[in-house]
Image 1 (cartoon, rainbow, N blue to C red):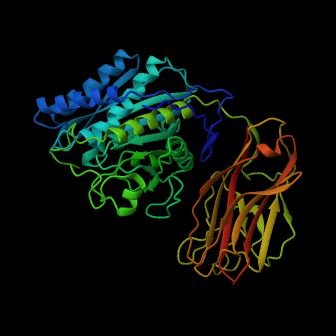
Image 2: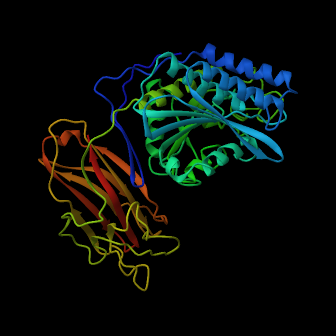
Length: 498
């Protein structure tokens, strides 16, 4: 496999009320070259286990327990602390293999998982021997290199995914709340060697704008880490929706950021996708999906190769990052000196306060914040009608108190935001964040459009390194600048880190 020499940019992950950020050290070792030969050797073992146990590795069947014992044995020999967690479903005992690598911050856990079970129809080598083997070989490489991560690394192989995410749901449900809160990110790898592959990333930021919406805060940054890897090898990627079909589902259900890769299942590759990635248009990504022919012959080596390296890239990049230092932050629970700036809007001016929810063809102003009870909001009251206190008549702006930035970076701004509007909005409407220092520049902008957009909290980050050593203000602006439209916006948990 190709050894990566790319040192990626800083990553910031923020869960509601719980900072999880990644600042790269000045010099970092390149993520390792995961051996395709070794990954395929694990697949050969899974195939042999299926062959010896009725042709499958399904929940409640002897082939599954043999697979779990194989994985656990490899990890025990490599120095992991392992647990074979049992659960019952459909009258049969299932197992999750949980493996913790010693060291790292126990309150800052990066978890990496894949389901280990097959369907009863076949051995499940792509679905999901491929993901299981890729994360297993990455975990073993952690041991070979005696990695000393800053985050605590936990790997998991889930049982009974094919019966409705039973193993991962059992794990999440049975974690005490205090332990659950320590897991700051979860990476899932389910089918990463499809024979007619695509290169899909879980759409953490909902940039595709379809389906279930964005993942929990921090998911966009997990997606970006994986995108950085594929960019470094010249492979374009596309989003895949958080549709709940794999083991990230229980994690995002409790607000844990998630990401991962996927090379396609029973869906049919389009002509555009074949042009993008090669392969055969009009044919399923995996013609043997949930069939007896999902054997070691049902693997695309190139896709498996790339995705195994992507797993390692993410583990090394996130897991060994240095903790960030907070330069300045505001969660708006107390008054810190934000002041309104003159604008043209006649209503819906920015203010700090406890927002009231409004709805018009869906939620427009959110009555909930990301943390605490207060945020920055355009006209916090609801009024008798949804449009009583929205932005009307032009622009409204509010600015932070002066912030003195350190002379050295890198510096990163992160914040939570939403912009909501009616279908009569246009691109003249916007939410905008600018930095005013020696020069003034826009670091984030979301434009309106002639579609109905409901309020949903999202996250944004921006590089402020160019302002190092300056005293700056953060300017937050919103506009209803064209035809009168229902426009609402909110901002919460603004932070600058180094």
